[in-house]
Structure formats: C-alpha cells, structure tokens
Image 1 (cartoon, rainbow, N blue to C red):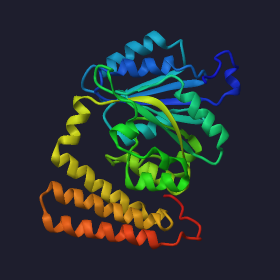
Image 2 (image 1 turned 120 degrees about the vertical axis):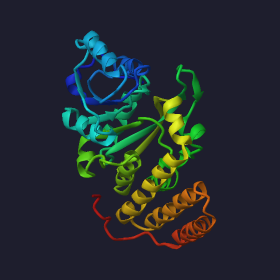
Image 3 (image 1 turned 90 degrees about the vertical axis):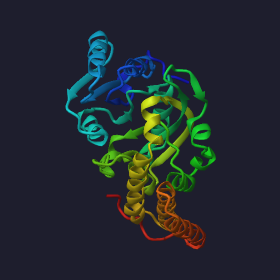
Length: 315
C-alpha cells in the first residue's frame, strides 16, 4: 500500500534518491521519470554525471530543466572518477535520513520506496533493506519476474533470517540492480563504498551482513535492465577474470569481520572463486586445488560452533 500523498511530508523521513550516471543516454530519462512517478512524497533527487562521453549529461540537463519545480533536485556534471567515488559523493551531497542508490540504466518501480521505508521504520535495528527486481531488456520488455530467483537462481527463503542472509550474501551474490534502501547512519558505520573496486556492492553488503544490519522484503522495488553494454562485460573472459580476482581479494579481506561458521564459509567462497578463475584460464591443477579446498572448508564450516565473542568492528 502506498503512502497517501496528502500526508504532511514533514512527518515522513526524507529519502535521497542517488543516481550515478554514465553513458546511458538511451535509458536515463526513464530512470529519472521513475523517481518522479514514485508516490512516496518526501524525497529528493541527487544526480552526478560521471564524465559521460555520449549525450547522457545533456539528457539529464533537459530533464532537470523541465522538472526542477516538481521535487528537490541537485545535478552535478564532472570528470570520470568511477562508480564508488561517485556514490560516496552522492551520499555526501544528500540530506536524507534514508538513501536509495540507483543506476541510470535501471528504474524504480512505484511503491518500492514506500515498502522499504516502512520496513526500516518498523525494524530500527536494521541499517539497510534489500528487495527484489524485475528484469527487463533494452526496450523495457520484461524478461524475468524475479531477478533474484529467475536470473540469479537464488533461494529467497534464505533472506528471511539473519543467518540466511549472511549465508546468501557470502555464497551466492544475487542482488541484481539497485534494490537497497539504507540508513545514512549505517553507511557511516561501515565507511560507505570502497573506492577503486569494480565490485563495490558486494564489498559493502558483506560489511553490512557482518553486523546483521541487512533486512529483506519480497517486493520488486526496481527494474534491472539487461542490455548490450552490461551483458558484453560479463562475457569478456579477461574482464571476468579481473572481476573474479578482485572478488577473491574482497572475500579474504572481509573474512575477519565474521564470526564462525561464516568466517570459514567466506574463506571457502574465496577458493570457489579461485576455481572459477582457474577454469577460465584453463589451469587444471589450480582448479583441482581450489575445488578441494572449497569442499573441505564447507565441511569444516558445518563443524564450527558459532562464536560467543563479540563480532569484530567493520572497517
């Protein structure tokens, strides 16, 4: 159920919708329209064009000129600094208690902000809540009803408990599209996005999961778009190897934040990623080594007694 827009917006928490834009001239207007169309009334829109080389910046400027009286908007155009640096700058510019990171080729679905705000208001111990997405193509044709279930083959039931969320975030990254609403205070606690990473989202969600700060609602809150540009990156073997190698380093680096058995599970995941790299590079000996290490650590994790010590602080 959506908020009644006749409500006094001063009684509702402000949501800052954060859009990092880069070379999405075909899709960015649909993204921005979706922010305006969402019925949640207490919101602001912060956009940074991260050095686009196509007409994305011009599309945004035209849209802002048309809709600048419809909601509070801040638009910045600057040189390219990368996605993590852009997200951190967006957070610094935002005024909201709640932050909704987006993507300039995806778009929000009406009612998503409402559902996520309600969740965080009724779960004060959670720093962020994730939802599901529908998957669409470049022409807005629906490909999958559930990005988590149909695209990533995830078991959404895992996300209904803190233990399940930890296991899911560690073992099967299934967060497709901009599906999170976060408390500003939660990002301050885990130091926001790590700049210089290609997979900055998994790194951030691991840090949140380590603190049991993640919740889940089984609601589609955005449309995740699959198109030529993002699809080609996943099929390019050298790029996949680079991304996987970075993922492995993140897994090893963040293992210390978790209690057992999750720490061992994350170490196991680092070997599983190592096996993927060895497979792509056609290296049979490392492939066998990483698979055996992975299986051994998965078995060991089942024997680990959950730690009674306080969790390490996320850094």
